[in-house]
Length: 163
Image (tube, rainbow, N blue to C red; front, side):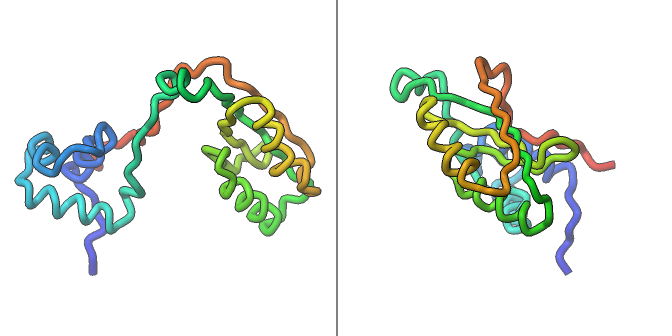
């Protein structure tokens, strides 16, 4: 039976990888105070257990703005007419499949979903609303909030040492 525990060393590796997933195994091992083979084995185990879902590059929207435009970020509340499991799953599947939807949360109480969407401009946002909301008879209410400034964006998960 596989050991499903996580120790302080695993948490340290996860913290370091959240800071910089591009570290070589050698650099990661040095920062975690491990031998490179031990580090490699532990990271492999963390990946196999699904604790490391994926590794991505976080792009700097402000530096890309001169090249691509500033874009439009909206937080959108969506309330459905029917909230049965099938209806919730159907809307969620459509939202998750939409490239403009960066984040999708089922929430309670209040609206059924909160979406974070990123569009090129207002016409792009309007096209998204047509695809995702207007054409769905089960969407009762949509309320969009447009971001004027992002004060903080951090995808890191806070990790605590187990007791």
